[in-house]
Image 1 (spheres, rainbow, N blue to C red):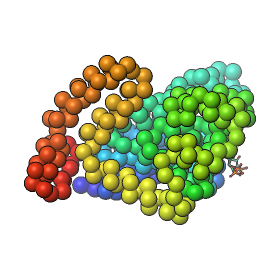
Image 2 (cartoon, rainbow, N blue to C red; image 1 turned 180 degrees about the horizontal axis):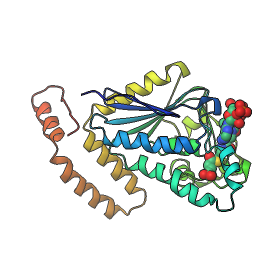
Image 3 (cartoon, rainbow, N blue to C red; image 1 turned 120 degrees about the vertical axis):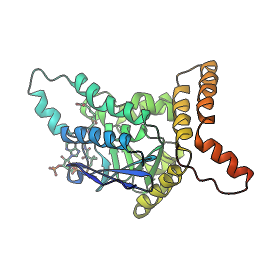
Image 4 (cartoon, protein in one colour; image 1 turned 90 degrees about the vertical axis):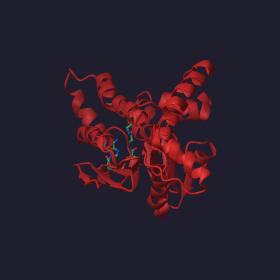
Length: 268
Ligand code: T3D
């Protein structure tokens, strides 16, 4: 079964070998997220969630930067309307997006080129793995325009780099280089820019060929553990193991091991 590409105004989605490659495609504005892109992201995720062929998501972007965060032109225009509430905007757009990414039943990988700013970086932080081009860089950006980090930055960054480094980045809005990001654990791997998509796609394909339901439950358990007690984590592991043990892929994995052959996982 093949899946037709989805060409939206600001986003392109194609499915290859079980990987949905979601490309932000507004390069002339550095992939700043306007209302159209917020809507297109929701449409793209609807399609990805509904597609049984998709077993991993790769987030990437066209042009010289990964994503410049919220489209500030639109925010400036919206503010002219007295009824505009920025908190509602954040709740109904970025917050929903981040929670949807974390709830997906598959691994999520970000392939990051150029600069990622503000909410654009936060979206990548919601992914499980980040593979960065050697020209990638990262900025919290929010303080430069008198805003508070959002889209999960205040939650994701301390998890990865601790509170002091988070506040250093958030206060200064400094542009973090990719080597420092790698050494701090903010990206998993750095590759030459012209190899980014090839490498990230290879990683995503590898994950898509694995026991998808077990990987989905793995990310669920790991993310739940960040806010749970050891007792709660142990209990969730036990419950999820019960579900995993009933999957076809578990039977296939054990059978293949005993038969000394490569398993053929189907994601079921
Ligand atoms: O309402 C809410 O939901 C609040 C939520 C906020 C979440 C946030 O994300 S706040 C942070 C917003 N982002 C920023 O502050 C970053 C702003 N952009 C930049 O600092 C730079 O553009 C970059 C460092 C990202 C890239 O620099 P460079 O030199 O490669 O490109 P450039 O020349 O600055 O920009 C190219 C075009 O993209 C330019 O448009 P033009 O003049 O050619 O028509 C520029 O205005 C546009 N652009 C870049 N970022 C944004 C943007 N337009 C609107 N909004 C942007 N965020």
